[in-house]
Length: 177
Image 1 (cartoon, one colour):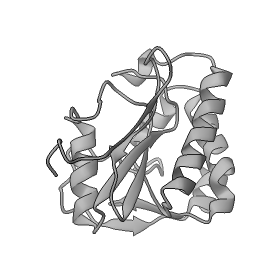
Image 2: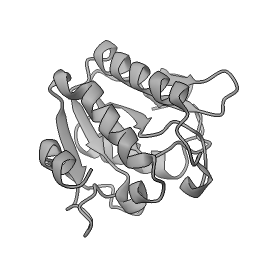
Image 3: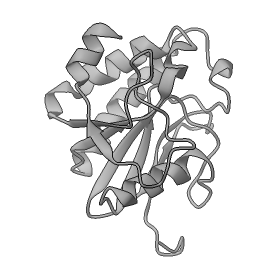
């Protein structure tokens, strides 16, 4: 899509230190949950988000939206808060849920890899996000097979033609998180 015709989905906090949503609207939108947002913005989605967009398109989606386990912007997950920011978590839970409902999204691709273990707050944040969305009966997906540690693979450096596979989220939550 031409950026001039793209209808962006974008939400940040007041000082832009956190991003809750970034994507492109379509008639069939794929949600992707990563670990934490970097510096990408509408019209500037180089890196991971360009992979997300291409993989979404390959799988028959004409739109995509990126959410995150923890919404604080950081290029390196090790730069993330060491303690929970309760307001950020609360805002993320509320915004992701409402966004999924408003955009009628049913398919959610998990894509964060073993980095979920890099900060103590990531796993509990993912668990809270899952609990907040559980009643929406989402169709959870991953690309490739889980990592050796059992986590959904990150999309960076994965082929554009990566199919989405069903993912047993209940089992993952019980065994891994």
